[in-house]
Every structure is written in C-alpha cells, then in structure tokens.
Length: 268
Image (cartoon, rainbow, N blue to C red):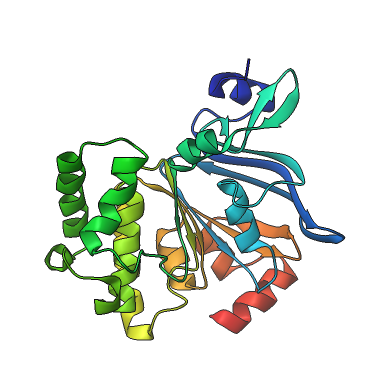
C-alpha cells in the first residue's frame, strides 16, 4: 500500500504548507549531469521565480516537477504526493500512465510556444481536458471556460482559432486552459520569451492577477522586474545547482554570490 501525502510529509520533514518540495533532486542524461542536488520548498499560495543562464538546469527542474522528466535521484513532492511514483515499503514504484495523467492534471504547465490545439477554437481548447480528463459535464466546462476567458480579457475570442490570435493572446488562452483543470500549482517555463516586447505586459498582468488570487506558481523567467514585484522567493541556478536563493528584492539589490552579481549585472 502506497504512502499517503500526510505520511510522506512526516517521513521527509515536509512543512504542512509546502506545495512543491524538492530535496537532493538530480537528473542525468547518460554521463551528463544536468541537476546536481536541488533543494526547493515552495509554500502554497506563493510565487517562486527561477533565474539563471541557459543550460543551468532551470527548465529541466521545472519538467521534473510534473514528471515530464524522470528523476535520477532525490525526492520531489507536490502537495505531499509523488507525481510519477508511489512509495511502498520504502521503495519507489512508477505509476501507470492513467494514474500519472490524473496526477499531472493537478499541475498546470505553460511553455514558451503556447502548445494550443491549432485545429480547435479557443473554447474547444479550454473544455477538452476538463471534459475528458476531469469528466466534467460539457455545460459546466463551457460555463467555467467563459469565466476564465473573462479573467484573462478574452471573452470576445471564444470562437477564434489560435492562428487568428496574437502571441500574447495565445499565451493568455494557454493560461486559461491550464486554469480550467483547477490545478494546485502552475509551472511557467519562460512564458514571455517568445513574445514581441509590446505583448509581454498583457501576459505578466494575468500572472500578477493569479498571484494576487493565491495561485501557487513556479516561474522560470528572464523578467527580473516581475520577479522583484511578484516573487516571494528568487532562486538563481547555474551549473545544475542553486547558487543563491532568498527574498527577490534583497537578492536583486544586494546579491551575496559573485556569480549571482555577475549574472544580474548583465540582465538588469
């Protein structure tokens, strides 16, 4: 019999309010070690921003959270539960695909490239997963989709196809689609990096609104101003490890590590 979230929290010393908890997370591709022991604790309702140079392991760690990448070592829990594994008799066993899909449904992920279904309208994109994964009645899914589109300022785009939208509008639809699954946490992998500069603000505003509403978020970003304004913690990664982490405003104003200082001097 697999451990319950409460049992996992007690066993691994996970705080009661922790939503994403990582200890000693490692990830290798053959001889290449991309993550070399990452420790992170993201309390429920908080925003953790991860920054760092390309190749530092930021996106890999994000993908480990929802088991798009399998861990080589360490533990990673979301709301006290393993995502791709069950712990039984002190051993981790991979869960079956249908169980993995159900657990992933509680973790929304936003990519640089939007990943909308191009052959579906905005409404169809939003209701597809709630109906087929959550087994939500179609009328309820549509009603909730309309509410979400209003939240992201796209009530007038219900019947449009992704190709008819700007990049910023597509990313806002992608955020609404992720929210339609009622996730416990949202993961953002550089959500504004593919956008024209004038479209970045509209996506960041939606993310601000989500933060103010208490959504737990882990955000890989180059938007240092957003991290300073909205982040509850800032994590600087380089070479597969966390070099420095702390309060965003304090870290940006007075980084303690020379490597953090060097990086911030180039992006601010």
